[in-house]
Image (tube, rainbow, N blue to C red; front, side):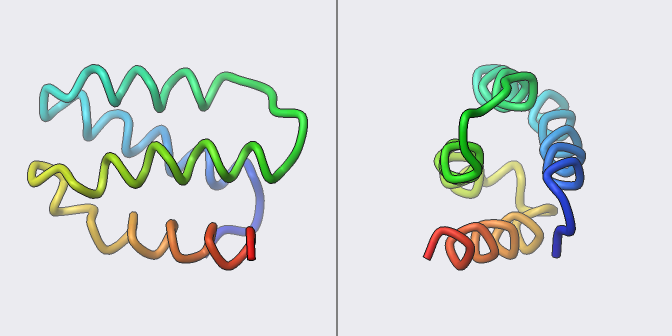
Length: 81
């Protein structure tokens, strides 16, 4: 689904905007902050994103993106083993 970390960051930006549109500012801010941080390892990078997306996927307001987020989570979990 993603070929680079930049593609993951771009996807996170789209989700962030969707969260803001649905008045989910706390999660939007958490995701925005993740998107601006430099990580020491790819495991940390993916792990932090996974934790945030697991919160996002529970929001009923984000149903339009649920399938994409589930695919992203699946990809991350496979990468982390």
